[in-house]
Every structure is written in structure tokens, then in C-alpha cells.
Length: 324
Length: 250
Ligand SMILES: Nc1ncnc2c1ncn2[C@@H]1O[C@H](COP(=O)(O)OP(=O)(O)O)[C@@H](O)[C@H]1O
Ligand SMILES: [Mg+2]
Image 1 (cartoon, rainbow over the protein chains, first blue to last red):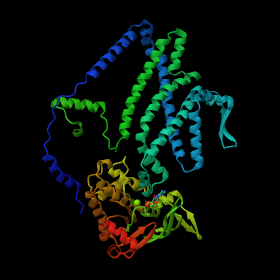
Image 2: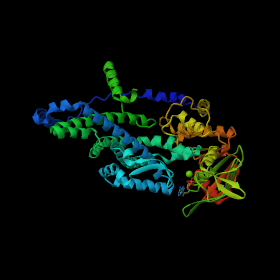
Image 3: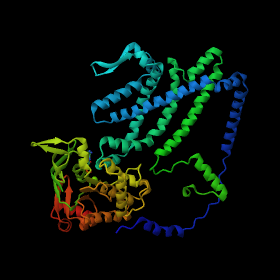
Image 4: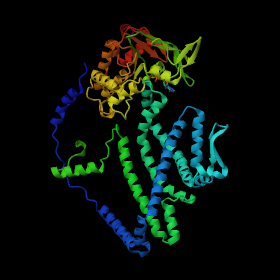
């Protein structure tokens, strides 16, 4: 008969009790070099902070005046919209392209390869201007039977507003990069997982959505976070096609008032703020998809705060491996 | 239950299976022995169509695997039918291959719900019974990485059983285990053999084969060299190659 596991665990416990643990008490090694280095860097940082704060040409007053002005905030919202929409398109397209690329069907895999080749191989700026000028190539767009009659048609300018051109340009370009990230994620999943899923009678699409992609996420998330932060800033490129996002709004203001530096500082502070929020978001998304992994999860700030408080109450440091 | 007729399989120019025939009756346990590289894994993979055979036939539960015969011609089955027939054949792997992102219970419940479209409540109740049967009651919420190798392999067996398979394939189920964990898996397998499951077991555990097998097949270099009762093949092997192999593993 098979021994139940709690029984086995119980038998093993006697060994642990037999070896008493003693705390190691030793004088830690001193590092004078580190102290000198840290002091030098601290002085340099203090000098930098001092000039930035006291140089009147930074015009901090102007920065404060525009930081939460309604036009800047509207630009910020546009930037966030563009980033979210373009990343959504990019991620979905990336998944489709990656699955196509790994398909046994040669037509699909070659098409995907060519797409990635083209969109990674031409500058994003050129692509944006291209989408903006699409109506020059195709004055009318229509939906209908391929090579047959169209049901709905209209002028390209009506469909492709500058905003749509911006989202398309950013999203389609992002799809090419996301495709490679997703492909790397898919390839990182152990072959045995796929084999086991097939042997249970699952179909190709079920294996992909239920087994492969969820496990690929662990590999896909970190670079996707990176891409999202990159997209936040690439979205400023659409200022060339006059989409009023954060940077373009700042530009409009400073061409009028000539307060170039303070307005660029305003925009940069907002980019930094959103990047910070995204970084925190990435931490939690990574934790979510790390479930089932053998590596210990990093603590959330709340958890480590609780732990610190708990330690102070008990008045001694606990080995983190044994507390939960 | 399972009939393999003159199956051949090549990888590139190399012929890995060179005309293998095999018959397993309902409720029988057949153990396949043989040196590494002799084509044992490939044969199991051909039986549930994870690998396409080049010639010959594989029958499971009275039906051709991967094909349908119609007016004297073979037609390849569409993907969803291949998948449905595969669902009747359970497979247990050397490296367990539990779904790492799912709990033990989710591992067991996934395919019955997704493939067989059974109700989640019923499936989970049965999954818990199966866990008890393999000695892992109460481990349903653990992730595979939190279990020992022996426990993982027992979960893998329970996962195969959850599909109520007609045939169970085992590919060296204890080869990746620490020696002290081998017996807990073999005990479960002996129980299954006693319960009347039809099993094909590739193994190097001669003791298990002697005790649980109804018949033993010795394979080498892509062919079945010798086949018979455990007594015949293990204690009185007729072929020189079988004798040489057994003298190394016994
Ligand atoms: N997918 C494959 N492609 C090419 N060669 C393979 C593949 N799978 C197995 N082989 C080869 O087939 C031979 C038999 O392999 P296998 O069936 O795994 O043997 P066994 O399980 O008896 O050790 C080995 O030489 C192996 O290299
Ligand atoms: Mg093998």
C-alpha cells in the first residue's frame, strides 16, 4: 500500500530536532573604500541639486504654473491613451504573428516573417508619416468581397484621422517587436508540457491558450513592461503628425511663450511619473504570472512593511525563509 | 485492446522502428524492456499518434489510430478526431510533465472539462477521489514544484486516470526518480494492474515487470526480439541479445 504523505513527513521530523542550531556571532568585515566612494558621489549629487534648484533659468515657477494646467493634463491623457491603445494592438498582433511564425503552414510563417522584417526594418517615424498620408495612396477605402464589390466605402481621410493614423502607426510597429518577444516566450515552454497536453486529447489551439501562453507569460512580461515604457516615450513621435499628446502640447505652449526649458521639464516630469506607475504595475503583474514557479516571490512593499513591524515587535530578526 | 501491426517509422534516413508488431488484450499488462535507443519511446508515441507512422497499422479499442478506412482507402483523420481518440489513451512520461502553472487539482480537472466537456463539480469530486487513490489526498492545492518527484509522478498518473482511458502508456515512469521514491510509484502502478487497467509499460524495473506483467516484450534496434511470459523472457531468454541485456540489468 502507498504510505500517506503526512505519515512520511511525520517520520522525517525526528531528524530536525536532533541537531540544535547555534547563531553565528562574528565581527563583520569593514569596507572603508565603499564609504569614501559613497561620500564622493553624495557631494557631487548635492552640487547638482543645488545648481538645479538655484539657477533662475530653470524657471521653476513656470514649471509649477504649467505642471497641472488643463492643456498639459489633456496632453497627458492623450499620451496615456495612445500608449494603452498602441500596446493593446501591439500585444494582440504580436501573439497572432508569433503563433503564425511557429505554424507548420509555410504561407502563414512566411507572411509573419515578412511582416516583422518590414516593420522592424523601416523607421517608426517614416511609418507614422506614411499612415498620416495614406489617403494620398488610397483616396477611398471600402469593405466588401475580396476583389469583388464593396459594401461600405468612404474617403480615407474620414477613416484615418490623425489620431487613428497615430494609433495604427505605433500599434502595427509594436506588433513586430512584440511578436519576437512572444515567440521567445513560447519557445521557452518545455516541450514536455505540450506533449502532455496533446496526450490528454487537447487540440492545438487549446494547447496554445491554456498551456503554452500562460507559461510563456513569465518570459513575456518583463520585456513587455520595457516595451510599454518605451512606447510611452515613442508616442511623443506622433507630434510630427500634429497629434496633441503631451510633448506636442508642451511644444505648442513654448512656441508661443518661448519658455522652452521649463515646459520640457514639465513634460519630462510627467513621463517620469507615468514610468514610475508602470514600473510598479509590472512588479505586480510579474508576481501574478510567477505562480507555480519554484523561485521565491519578491515581497510586496506591504508584505515587507508587515514583516519589519513584526520583527520589531518580537525584537529579533527572523530568517525570512521560515516566515510566511 | 491494442494491436500494433508491422509498424515502421523513420526519422530522416534512419529507420527507428523496423516492423514492430504487438498485441495487448483488455486488462493485460505488457512491459517493454530494451536498451536505450531501441525505439521504445517512439513506439509509445506512435500508439497515441504523437508521431505519425510511415507504414503498418495501430489499432486501439477496435479503431485505427490517426486514420479511417473508407472504401478500401485510408483517410487521415481531422485534428479534432485525432485528439478525441488520443483522449482515450492515457500517457505517463519519464519527466512527469505536470502543467507547472496549475495546481494539482487543476492539472487533473483541465482535460475532462475542456476535452470531455464534463461538469467541473463532478470532475473535481472525482479528481479528489483519484488523489486519494494514489496516496495524495489533501495535495490538491499544491503546485507541482512543491511536490517531490514521486508525488509528481503519482499526480501525473492520476491526471491520466481522470480521463478514464481505455489504455495506459507508461514511458519509464520511474527513471527520473531518486531510488527511495521509485517504490511509491511502482506500488500505485501495481494497484492499477490489479484493478484491471490495460497497460503498456516501458521500464527498466525488472522486479516490477516480473511481478505485474502478463507478458514481456524485449526490443532492440527497432524490432521485437523476444516476447513471452515473464517467466520465459526473464528467466529463460532464448535470444542472445535478450540474455546479454538481462545480464547487465539484473
Ligand atoms: N524526433 C526525433 N527525431 C530524430 N530522431 C529521433 C527522434 N526521436 C527519437 N529519435 C531517435 O530514435 C532512436 C530511438 O529513440 P527512442 O524511441 O527514444 O528510444 P528509447 O526510448 O528506446 O531509448 C534514438 O536513436 C533517437 O535518437
Ligand atoms: Mg525512451
